[in-house]
Length: 155
Image 1 (cartoon, helix red, strand yellow):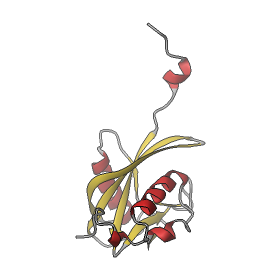
Image 2 (image 1 turned 90 degrees about the horizontal axis):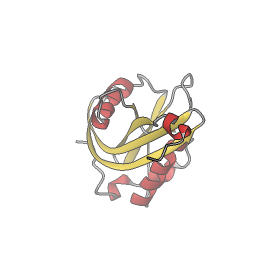
Image 3 (image 1 turned 180 degrees about the vertical axis):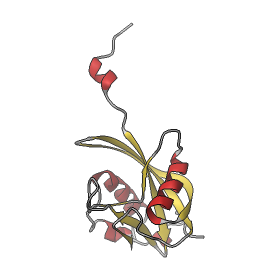
Image 4 (image 1 turned 90 degrees about the vertical axis):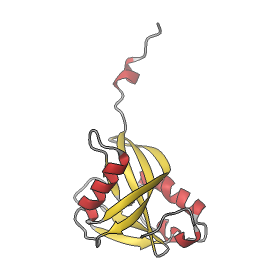
C-alpha cells in the first residue's frame, strides 16, 4: 500500500462558508465587514461559516438572522469558490436566496448596499468573493438582476 506524505495528512480542511446572493429591485446585497474583524472594511456577500453539524442552508438562515435580522429562503447553489488566504483556505458555497421577512439591521456588519453587477467591481470585495462577482457579471451582463430570470427575487 502506498504511503501518503505527512504534509498531505496534516493539511487542514478549508473553512466552509455559505454566501447569500439576495436580489431586490434589480440589485444584489453586499455587506461590509466591521473594522475590528479580520478583513475589516472589505465588502462581501452576507453569510458566514458553517457550525458543526449544520447544513449550508441552515447556516445561511442563521447567519442572516444574526448579522442582518432578516429571514431568507435558500434556493439553488450559484457557485463554489476555493480560496487560500495567509491564515488558511476557505470553501465558499454561494446560493441564490430570497429575502422573505424583516428589515435590515446592522447587527454584525458595518454597512450594507444594494448594487447592480456593474457597480460590484468598484467595491473593495474580499478576494474569495471576487469569482462570485465575475459569475454574476456573466449571468447579468446588463448589470440589472431583473434581466436574469433565473435569480429568485423577494417575495
